[in-house]
Image (tube, rainbow, N blue to C red; front, side):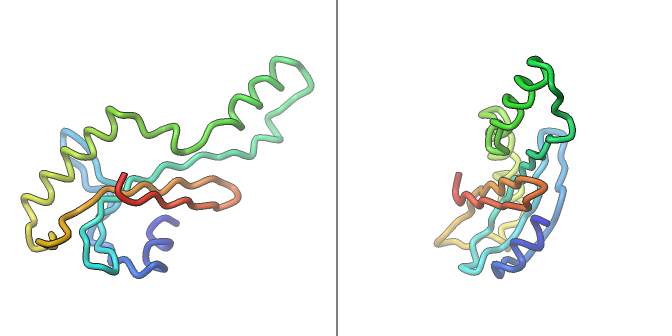
Length: 123
């Protein structure tokens, strides 16, 4: 879903699930302006109607879960790992780095089942 969204925005996908011992990059792509982009994908399922019951405890749990967003799952520690892994990839693959524009990290926040995607550039 995330790759299809980016392809629809004229991004060229270079790699997916790039793993190293110190971190992982969900998607590596080139944007239409030829900038190397490392895309972190965070997804959350917000429809929990079937899990909600009649008890006060269940209803409170449902309200707390419904208030969460995919963005809440991107911690500062995760962002530091992303930056480190992105720097190492860019250093190892200078052919993908635009000298004038460099590279950036984006976030795709996906809410299911509505399939709503919010794209944050240069986080």
